[in-house]
Length: 485
Image: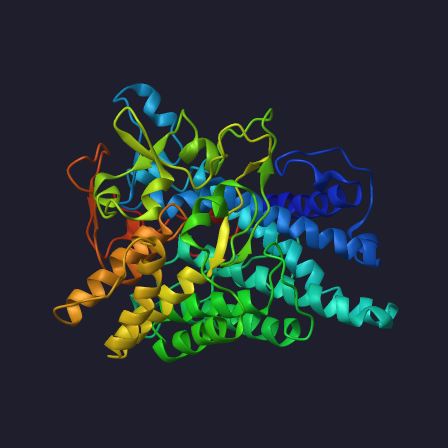
C-alpha cells in the first residue's frame, strides 16, 4: 500500500468511525463533518467506539457500492449502454473509460483509483474492529456476545472487500488452472506508512475470503440478526455460494446455497411487491443483506447509482439485447421506464410523489441470486432436473399470471436459460462482467452499441482494471496488471 494511500485510508477509517460517534451517520452517506482529535486507540478501547466503527464500516461499504464499483461490471459489460452524444462531453460520463475498455493506471481520480481506495478504506475499518475484539472482551467480559456479533459482521465485510477487489483488479479464479495468477493484497491489519505490500495469488486471496466467511458463520450463528442491513450468518452462506460458484467448486456452492434456501427462513418477494423491494426503501422478503445508502429528496445524488441509472437525466440505460430478454408478462419488465426510446432502470428510483429518502440501497445478497447460484452449480454437476426446478422458482415469481414449466431440448439449452435468467434477475446489480469473464466468454454488445469498442474477446487484459500508478510508484512490491493498447 502506498504511504499516501495508507494515510488517506487511515484518515477515512477514523472519520467514518468518528462521524458515527458525533451522530453524522444519521445523515446522508456522502456527507462529512469536521471532527475533533480523537485517537484510533481511544475509539477502539470503548464499546461505543467499536459500535460506531461498525456503523462507519457499513457506511464505507455503502460509499463504494453506490459509487463506481457496483456500476463497473454492468457498464463495462454488455447489458448497459452509455447515453453518449458523440461529442466531447461524452468523456464526462460515469465510467466512460471502462465502458470503452480504455482504463489507465494514471486514472486515480476516476474509477481506477476510486474503487481501489474506497474498498481499502472499508477493509481497514473492518480490520481495526477485528483486531480490537480480543482486548475489548478482556475489558468487557459481559459484552462477549455483542463483540462476537461485531467480529462476525466485520469478517463478512472484510471478505467482501477482498472478493470485490479481486473481481475488479484480478482475472477470475480459473484463469489459470491452479489459480496461481495474481490476486490482490490480503490485509489482516492496517499496514504502516510506507510498508511494502505485495499481491497474493488468486488461490491465496480466495483462501482468505472463504476462511473469513466460514469463521463469520460460526460466530454469527450464535448471535442471529434478521435485519437486512446487518450481515448475518445467512448472508455469509449466500456469499459463500457465490464465491464457490466463481471458484467452480460446484459441490460447495450447492451446499452453501442449500443452507440458505432450507435453513435461512427467507422467501422470494411476491411479484406484487417486486418494485417495492427497490423503490420503497423497505427490504423485500428475499433480501438477505443490503447496504443503507439514502439521500434526501433535496440533496444531491450526483455520481450515485440513482443519478447514473434511474433519474430522468440518466447516463446509462439498458442495451436492447437485455431489454428484449423480457417477455410481456414478466413483472421485471415494469422495472424499466422509457425515455426517448431508451429504457432506464428503476432499481434505484423513488416511487413518484413519495416524500422519502431516495432508496439507493445496494442489494448485496438476495435469495433469487442464491437460487441461480445453485441452479448453475447443479447444472455443472449434471443434475439437470434439479437445476430446472431452481430456475422455475425464479421464472414463476416473475410471471404470476402464468404457470411456468421449464422445458429444454438438451443440456446446452438449459444452461442458456439459466444464464439468461441470471441476466434478467440481476441486471444493474453489479454482476454482468464478472459472470462473463468467469465463464470465459466474450463481451458482445449488439447492434445498438455506441461505444468506441463494442466487443472484447476472451481472454483479454482489459477484463480487469489496472493497478493505480501511484500505488505502483510508491509500493515497489506491488505487481502491475498488463496493459495493452
